[in-house]
Length: 200
Image 1 (tube, rainbow, N blue to C red):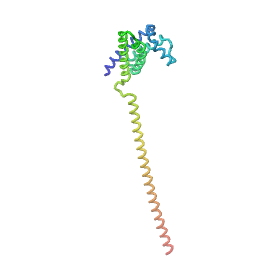
Image 2: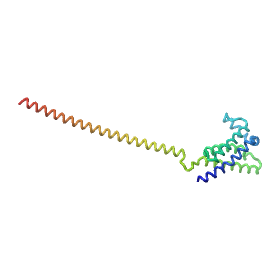
Image 3: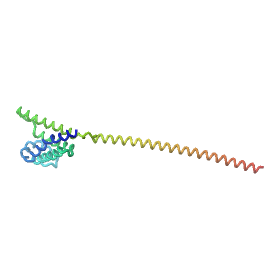
Image 4: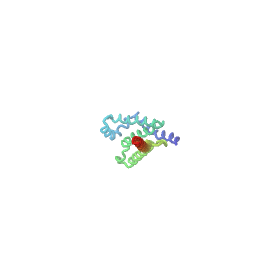
């Protein structure tokens, strides 16, 4: 499985690295297509630059950086999520097949749209890949379950200790009562013998 990952990740990343480099070199070619998506993004995220050319450059830089990380197997899950995040606006901007009037152009744009959505699916699978290790959520649930079991054991031990202490206290109380009664008997016996000697 490790060998498959080593082959599959660079293959998946290659299209993003290539496309990102192209966007960084010639952002003016992509910027007009990105404008319909860039304007709503800028209105919702105020810190983004308003210039569509700068936005497509940022998108291209993220694709190159995250693509390189994915290809090298460095932070692959995070890199895959970043690439999926860049691909959604790119697809919505560049392949708006529903706006095409020409049937052939519409079919071509639809194919590109679906291809990109397939890539998003592959990236999401990559982002969920834990290399056969348990996921963070599974580990958290297991830790919580182990914590509950440990707390229950500690509670049972504390209850057992308390019961033993109570039993020991009851035993010592009974022993003290027996000792007290025996001492009382001895005292009464001594007092009786003294009275007998006095009366004799």
